[in-house]
Image 1 (cartoon, rainbow, N blue to C red):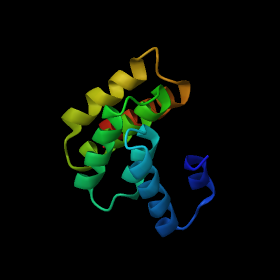
Image 2 (image 1 turned 60 degrees about the vertical axis):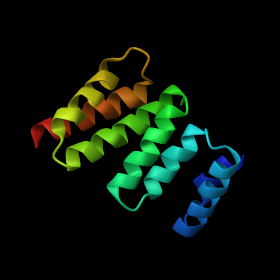
Image 3 (image 1 turned 180 degrees about the horizontal axis):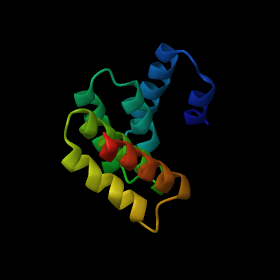
Image 4 (image 1 turned 90 degrees about the horizontal axis):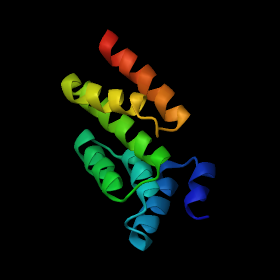
Length: 114
């Protein structure tokens, strides 16, 4: 329930406090790392948070968003050769949730066409 309160919180400072508290209580909660990455100030910190989320045994939906965001950071840093395989694997993985598959394909298309 505490995690769900993020959905109705618009203030960045309040979100940061909620995520910090959540990670102190449950440091292996992958969705909280996904949220922390969204609040990250720089790409290095965001990548660290995304990797922590991936190591926390995320559900398929969360894993997909963690990987898509990681691929976007790589692509924005000019590391398309690392981003493309991540997105391609998500797009073709039969266990990927449908929304993750579609987002991965769209993101892959945008990266390749740049």
